[in-house]
Image (cartoon, rainbow, N blue to C red; front, side, top):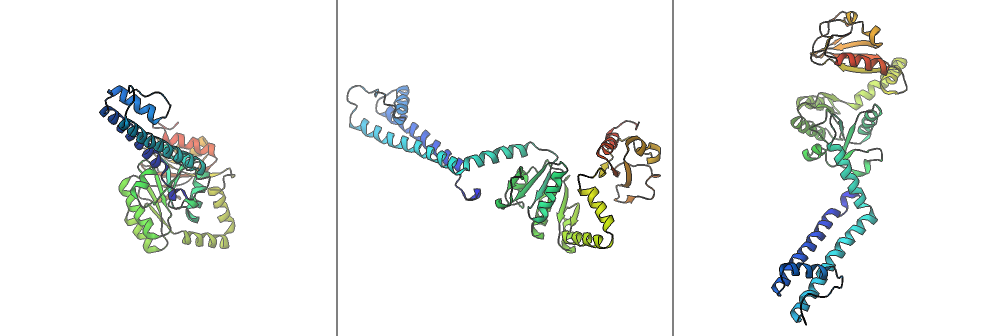
Length: 341
């Protein structure tokens, strides 16, 4: 049975605990009314409910009222404990308690995450996105309402409707850096984009849109990028048909982790020593081994032809190619606030 259809095990345990506490209170009050002191009343209630068999505190024959009250208390107490024990055993046998503890630990892990990526939707598009993000070592939290879509590889996920603000917050939307919404309908993607932008104004949002009108609306409500997977798939097939070697090279560099050369984007931070200097002046290739292919400025323009002669400016994003080691050296130089060595 799916987890979302099973009874609330913790609710059952809470009910059992409440019943037991209630029985103890009733027993204490009842024995107090029958003539015992406060401490004796509590003690008599505990030994009665636990059925340990100790002698009763009352002197002589306790009387009919005492016996009737004690009998009822025994029935209520043992019934409450049996109810709680049955809930625990049933949960262990059916795996519900184990599953809930696992989800609790997983939620604790998500609550401690910062700077992660969230993927809404685990259809074919969402699954492909998640697998690629994980392949490059970035932390990702997956959100979907269908529990059957989660596999054992989905170590961090949130079960629920991504259009709900509560579910987005459980996925750590306030602390995430990027959100990819790849739900099945444009309306859902639009709603998630709008809600996410309101919750986290600094979030980078990539939204799925299956037609030009939907793409325009995604950008209007706050998406940083709107992507039509069908259009991209068609362009990819066209590239393979017309320039198969170029298309294969780009795929290998971007997606194949076994290839030595990688593409990476590196944003210049405030106070970077690169600002005001050119690639030739900095001798980036000689110093790091990475090759700068292009630079994108704050106006979203790419500089390629003049990339070696143009001085770097605040907010530039470098697009470079090279080995992981050379790109790491370039990134370390960029993040240094002092003068470039």
